[in-house]
Length: 229
Image 1 (cartoon, one colour):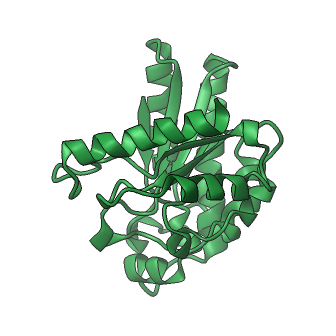
Image 2: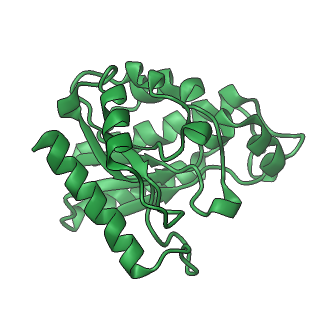
Image 3: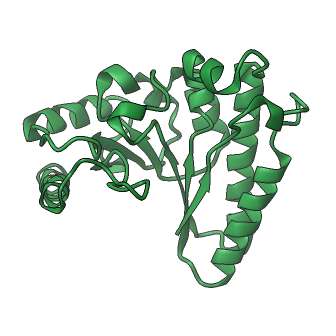
């Protein structure tokens, strides 16, 4: 089950800078409660909101000159995600509540670029989720693994190291090297690997054939078996 909460898309939707997102928060919370009440085993939300904090250019381009300050947007994003966790845990304390930080799915339309440093301490420290699904398919766009030092003990981090945007197959040796690098900040037993995103976030999909998608998934499985057994 997935719940999409992409954050604000225009300054007009943020008339009260200190109270910017009550409606999305209520809507996401109600959806999670409804689905879990029907027997869903977990919740996975997809957030674009943190990109407004991470990438100054993206924030200015989308929200314009009236954009709230990054701190205000971060307050709102953390509040939404923390409320979603509380809503799910009220129904089932053992339920899995995951969060995927989307950075943009199509190569020609990246959403936000830059490392997770501006949001890591508050995101990982104040949103009691797990696992966190983080896109790391390009070091240039997504930064290094240093922000993972803020991940609480016992929390799972899924490294989105395999691109779902382009057909070129990643080197397994490079994937293993990057997993080892991430393990300097999060214990290996709390790490996992996945594609960076889905293969068809929009009706047009991405420029990959079904066979290319299958090879990507096989690479993920083979790498996981080599690293974790």
